[in-house]
Length: 141
Image 1 (tube, one colour):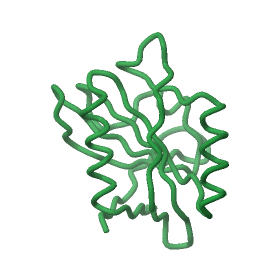
Image 2: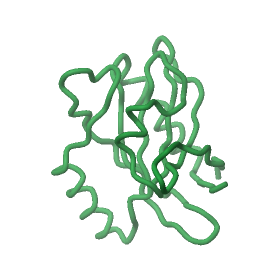
Image 3: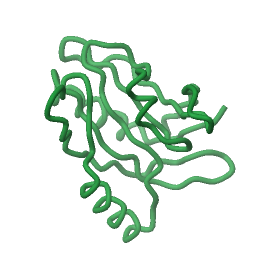
């Protein structure tokens, strides 16, 4: 099982973003570094949910925004190590849609927001064969 370490204050920011975006899904990027021991998140980059048809159930980060974020991460000497998003009034588990649009290696943090209140927060990694997500240990540091 892989591990993701993240400062508690950044977890609070993810919860707040989910609360503030409710009833729509929020989304953002996890910036940090990876090594043999896992990934360490050192900053977040909240992103615009550009999904137009169902933003309450899906999120979209457009390619232009992703490219800009990758450029900024390089300038800061970090990598994009994952994505976070909220599930309004749904469990903090990846959906089939999440699986279809995810990439292996990235960490995917999901925060469940029930009636505007952040609840569970989990992390997942897509298998190399893209068949399913595996739970990832999440360590607040």
